[in-house]
Length: 339
Image (cartoon, rainbow, N blue to C red; front, side, top):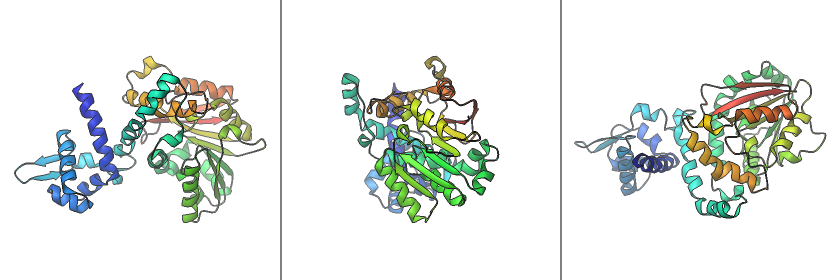
């Protein structure tokens, strides 16, 4: 139980340190006093001193009593700073305070059913955009696109791409910037995320991408795309079966559906040994499952798993389904599905 208490407290401290850029500051300083760290970060020393004490007790920060200085060891900087991306573990730890903030609302769901919509979650789209930058965008050209042989060449020539659950549109903007001959569309049910995606594409003057507020279960008949992507999005859908059927309907015979989902089994007994199993199931009932149930949805949950995913893809009409793991992303698997 002590480990649970200390782990939870450390997660909160790490999330706060990431948001305040304290790890980035520490990594750029020699062994320094709490005042020097606070000055470099533009923060109040008393708060910084107590934060440093918490992470010293957690073994994250090193403290030298004779000199009164603190230091972030290089091996810890390698997994806690923005320069460490895509290996920055502090990004995902932001989910701990984000989910804890809806605890009282979740209690109502436990007692009465229903769910919590995206509007209950402060900063969710911001954190997911950071996660997308790490797990998708950082490896998009070197690892993700090569999962589909010939896809880079087709994008260079010019094809139509649709992204389901685009969020703030990081992946689509990156692709559209790299492949000006292709046309990209991102859809999401969150108006604030779509607004951010549009603003980013306009700021970067990317003209071959557009973003729409649209439920993927309600994609109009006649919509077509050569490639459809869904990065960590299908398990949140209210009607995932219809979404997958819509994706299949949109694709031509040589089309492809590229889907990223959590690397987990559909069976609890096989997830007991998962190194982040407790985190994934908590993420599920505290967000992924409940946002689906808020719309009277299926509530698949984060750990719907590869067995159920493969089965549902087959039922949607996909005849070829390949499963891939990438070294940079221990949390997810990538599915390449074709008609």
